[in-house]
Amino acid sequence: MTTPEPALTNALLKVREAGYVLSEDWPRHGVRAQELGLHEDAGTVRLPPDVQLHDLHYIQNALPQQLSVQLLDYTDSTNSEMMRRRTKSGGADQLILTEYQSAGRGRRGKVWLGDYGRNIAMTLGIEFPLNLNALGGLSSVVGLALLQALELEGVDAQLKWPNDVWVKEQKLAGILVELVPTKIGTLAIVGIGINVDLTNVQASKIDQSVTTLRRLGALISRDDLVLAVHASVLKNFEVYSSEGFAPFLDAFNSAHCLQDRAAILVLGTESQQGIVRGIDITGGLRFEQNGATRIVTSGEVSLRPLTTEERQ
Ligand code: BTN
Image 1 (cartoon, rainbow, N blue to C red):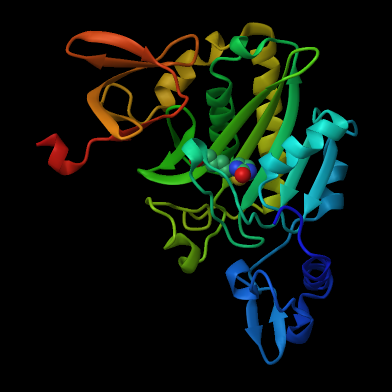
Image 2 (cartoon, rainbow, N blue to C red):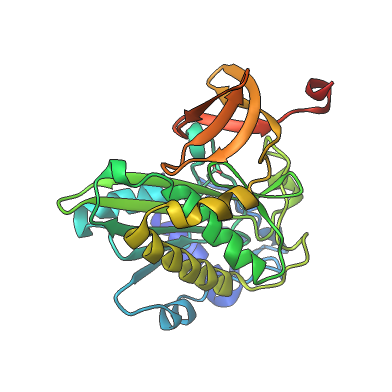
């Protein structure tokens, strides 16, 4: 379901405005309130007391006026939504936020999960007057922007190439950048997901070790985090637009959790062991095997640390 049924839209609007909706007004078919992490009791569906929904006016007022900001209570994926809007409005200078994604997308065809109103799911549309091939390292530049925004909140995170945000080997945030050619260059559809908070039910469905900002003790509101991330991404994009990836190389290598460490490169069903030697000017990974270093491009590849057994 790309856009929710009107009954679901209405029910979520009531939850937003009043904090609850009568159970009988929750749509009988389709997504169940519990799946969204909403509470059901005494004939009502309620917003859990610790959930603070986004405030669109607060966010809009703090952002540049030329940026069009959309807040959706429910969508399949903010990146997919941006792809669809692109055909109508071009997609540039747009920010899409949602409280819930029914089909959030990660890199390499993976799903991205989160509860209603507890995480950040945002997609920024930015157009570069550059050819798609000239945008190497762009997703790592976004990763660095996220790290910079998190650092201001006292969160000491690291990157795992190309752009996973980790804290002590647990995933905190992910980035999915999709590039679309335009008349003047390339539209970058920059999707960012941050685990601000996660219920145990949702966390148990995720096939890797994850952490959240709340578990790490960071109390920043989701709205302020959107603003901080937006500002940080824009600042890095300004530098990137004029100077390319070179100014970010050293910062990336220092922030990389696998720098100069043995790691496994996973290409589909195949995996190879080697040593991570940083990234190059195109954003590719320098991977050393048997004394020779080759450059690996991100595409469908992933990188992981060696397990204890593999280290022996
Ligand atoms: C990954 O780590 O695999 C990337 C995850 C990216 C998730 C974000 S959430 C907002 C945007 N919409 C999506 O469907 N995906 C990205």
